[in-house]
Image (cartoon, rainbow, N blue to C red; front, side, top):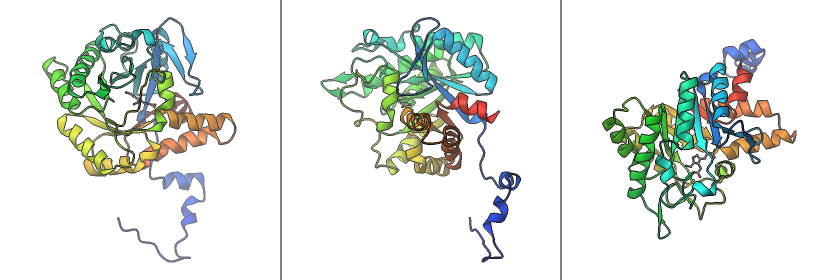
Length: 331
Ligand code: PBG
């Protein structure tokens, strides 16, 4: 693009900004409810809604309440919700067997939603961290997170989710080779329509803190995730990971976290042109929600501005805990 600009006063940028109508006419990007994916925390029990302390306004919901949330989301026009199970210490084991239990919380929630609100797309997370006693996304052997053995478990987890009826599987584990392995297993099992939205560019970030509280992983996690998540210093590496996952059969890719990595979003979209999503993660949500709660920023405007930033950066959609609030505001 080669912008041509006459010298002042022939050119006056403020002419196009004078009224709301003129500003709308010259807006380059727009945000709509169709851009939103709503991450939801699921927990055991019935009729339970339990606040997550570090995420003001966000609750862990029992399966019956998740179905109501899915109904609300569909009525608001939100196209997809993403499930994250909270697992207490008693269901966390070294072998992570709960991950591929056909009746685990995530799979029960998927079935319940698909029965009651079939029009909403259900997305689930593939990674072992909700089920491992170590809080890691893979198996730990002698202090090392082992790759290939973990991928075999992730395949079982993904197949169980597909059996339960999910529309979108989001591998967030960052093991090497998992997209290809999951894609072949899905094809072999006849799940050829299941979408793989790869957390391809997932960085080792401090912004996941509140999420780990929400899913019960904070207490469990020993060490950090730097041997599998990307170093925040690396952009070329993120591009290589995205290229790799697309080559292995990912339908769409994600950049995570969002706001500190908008350069990655833009580069990813310009380089690959694939469906590109950003995850505005728990820590980003917490910063905006907490500052707004204290009256330090205007919460609605900060939310809207932060989500528009993803559209401006080339994203096709955003996973955000603000999804229902933003959807209501857009109506
Ligand atoms: C783990 C997973 C994480 C998130 C989604 N899946 C946390 C992590 O990698 O430790 C974070 C989401 C958020 O912070 O909102 N498989």
